[in-house]
Every structure is written in C-alpha cells, then in structure tokens.
Length: 258
Ligand SMILES: [Mg+2]
Image (cartoon, rainbow, N blue to C red; front, side, top):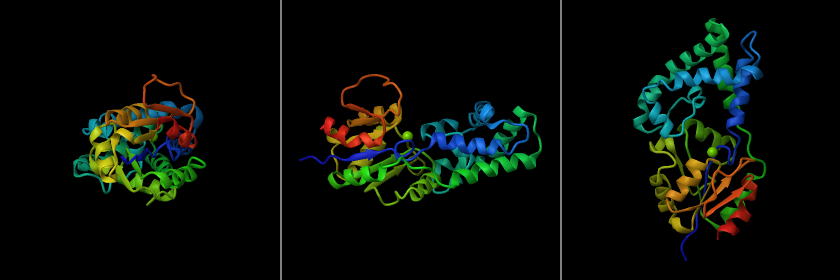
C-alpha cells in the first residue's frame, strides 16, 4: 500500500503568525510619542513595506515567502548561500524601515526609532502563541501517518518558533524555505520532502492556510490538500481539497479525502 504522508505548514496553521506580528508592531508603535498604535498600524506597515520592496533581493524574498516584518527581526543565520545579499542588507533595511515609519509621523529622533525597533524584535522573540489543541491533532495524525513540515521563512526565526512551540523534533522531515533556497509553491519542495518520507504524492496531503502556497502548491505536486479557512470564503471549489476552519478539523478532513 502506498505511504500516505501528512505535511503541515507552520505559520497560521499550527502557530499564530500574522496577528501576533501585528500585535508586536503595535507594541513598537506605542514607543513613539503621539502615535496611536491602533490607528497607525496600516500606514506604518506600508512605510516598512515601501523600503522592503526596494531591496535588491526582493524577488528572492517573495519567492521564499519572507514577510517585510520578518526582515525586521531575523538575523538571517543558517540560510542558503543565495541569501547572503539579503543578510548583508538586513541592518540597512531595518534602519531605513523604521526611519520611514518615523517620517510618516514626523519623528526623526533616532533613539526613539531604535527603541521601537528593539521593542518589535523583543516582542517577536518572546514566543508565538500556538493554535490550541494542535499538539493533540499532530500526535493523533503521527500515529497513523509519517508527518512532515514545509514552512516558508528565514531559518533562524522558523527554528525559534518550532522550539518555542514545542515542535522541534515533532516531524519526520522538515523544510524551511530559507535553508533550501526554494519555497512553496514550487513542486520541487513538496516532492523532495515526500521522497524523504518515502511517501506517495498521490495519496499524501498538504495542510495549510495559504491557498496559493499550500493548497495550489500541494495540488501542483500531485497531493491532496486541506485548507485552513479561518472564516475566509473558499476562493474556488477544487477536487481533492477539503476545507476546515482550523487544524482541529483535520482528522475529519483526512477521512473525507481518503
Ligand atoms: Mg501559513
């Protein structure tokens, strides 16, 4: 019988990523006098992105699924050699990104901007919240299937998140896009991981919250997929795709796809 592997995404599938990043960002903005964090989050993030998108390696970062806010706290250690340029640019990026935020609010005090930068990094390093009950789901699935992880992001922060959420060593195989130099949805990433698990793509399942990177990526590699909708409408109905509200719905979805 062919081996059915179950492959997980990390961010916003097993742990809370985007909303936690925004909470940390508001904590940082609160360091700036006269700035209302709740009213300023969007415009401040736009300022950060305006610098991020000017990077010489921006296309590479997009391909690997690195977010502008991850560039504000990753040390970029342990990544593929193709990321050396991004690593070298990171300190400049951080300084310019926070200066761009300051410009929006008429703040040019470097000490204040450094304080905001440090606050963001410390908040992100404190530990991401996990999706409640995900560890029981993982343990249950692992009793019946080999499990793997494919996560897009820089090596240092993805490994820190795994450690802080008790997931180091939980997967038989794992791929971090920064380490490989290739990210989801490239089918090479999925097929390489499944090969390492001795699993057959035709019966294996990708589980994640990104329609493009997890669902379409998994389908592109010949897998089925489980989409974590988290209240969002389904972009399109596709065969071999099950939709759940959170990872807690995974066991039923696996039965549905079998
Ligand atoms: Mg995700």
